[in-house]
Image (cartoon, rainbow, N blue to C red):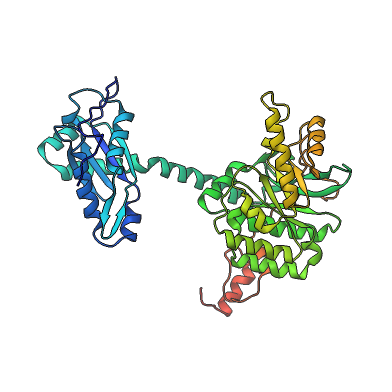
Length: 453
């Protein structure tokens, strides 16, 4: 195997630092390589790593042990007792191991490497010197794995805690909708539709609301947001049934644009309620990738055929793409409010032209372009001059939990609650009794046991 062209025998600069002579090398894509390519990929990776590490310096570093995607390397022999510039040393090792491909049969594959320097206790160094690797492995491996994956695991735990709190609040009726009107630029007394915004209230008696944005984005990162979107859509359907004089906009994540069974149940309901469908606008948020483009387009086209309106939220920011907009031809396009920073002293003439051209482009893709985040009368005039059709923002109206057309408050009902599921689905499995069912239901289960008892 050809040696590195530029990295051999390189000695990294030193600086005052904690003495860290052990390096943890994590091959982050090893499991994918093993599952995708034929042959003994693990052996090929081990041989490659040993060969490439020989070019760090002379004397060579000591490879202490291998454990799946982890390599523990003792660098003390090649550091001359100095304290390394840790970032430079880690990048040096990364470059060595990712520079060239590994042959796996007829394929060439590259490793993805993360290197971390860790402290080595005197006891651990004695184990290395004595060659008692098994004891060292038992005492250090769990720490190494946390070192390699701790950040990811911590993020996962944090996201799961936020998502858990979100769905706990949903189940207990703490999540409500606040409504903000989207007004016509021609006549501000005309409401194009009311956008509903998810909020949490501290208790059932207070009107004080807090945002749920961090919880929603956590649920999106975990791929667990569709339960919320189910709940929001069904809640909007019920509101539109009760209030035939209003139009509502419901925000859902692009992650939910997959033809799951719950969509087909919703389609059936909208077929029965065309007056509801035509007053429902579904806003696709810009906070998540559209993971199944063709499937998402087909789903939204189906909703349009049923009479619903489609809005693209935050155009120009996040994950909204021009290609997706071209394919679905939405009824509304909402411009990202970041483009409306007209009072910003850094807003140049060129930037204003970009805003105007973006508005004109969106006007060719949709019959109604809406400017979000309006905060002054100057911004209203500017957006009108640019050619927008609708405006929305705190300057015009704050989100309100109790608009004049609504009696009480709009609680978001959990779509997974037994009362909701039994109302919207056929009794295909009469023997299955939900844990929240009544005592009468439990008695009927004993009389007529189903497949799961």
